[in-house]
Image 1 (cartoon, rainbow, N blue to C red):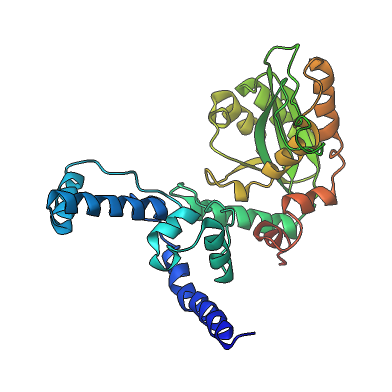
Image 2: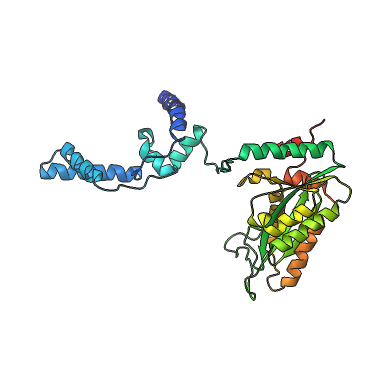
Length: 334
């Protein structure tokens, strides 16, 4: 191998690591507006310089005129994310690379294209107070499981038309999984359910509409399901039905039912959301019962009824067993 080959290889590797840290730092911020692909930017610059030379203008005056035009226009829309060609255009040391070359370069710098996650944030001004109260209630239930029960209560909808989702099938050009809807018309049904934080027991009702009267009947059902406990904590959100007059009257009739308000827009404090997810994954997605509304109701009934005796597996699935914040609160000792 020629001696110069080692020098070139060393320079290339050293260059990657030399630029890696500033590259990672810059990619933490959105790219600037108006970045064309690097090849287009170089071609446009060369064309403008040639035209200026032919017309007797200097490159500087051409650039000044372009700056003046840009100042009077709205300008391009600033992008929110980086792409390979934006990196190629923004960093001089990447201008000579092809897009596959840019990809290899940034990967050598320890940079990967990764899917983002949402920031956990609740706009509820009383978030902290409600979270503290919720954790205290779970601690009381953990210490006195025979006297107190905590029920996470929520509502969801399902429709006659199956939602599309992924499924195993033949590779393209084979057809993709089809969410079959015909011959049927769109219909929706509602489910209200209560998840026992300690046992994993699920109590529920499904109706075409969850009105204040229907919800009040559900509260009576919950009261009857726990005849021996002293307090039944109802952990729910600010759904208007919860504050209806008929529901307030029912709560007054059954003093064991004590309301605990969850923070609004805080699904991480509502483990029953994962029960809904489990339902979607196991029953709802791509179901083939669009033509048999009655059988679909029965399938939904069967899914939730399986948790009527309680389920330790469900508790693990929804995060009420293990090392999470809610599970830790339930395990708190005296």
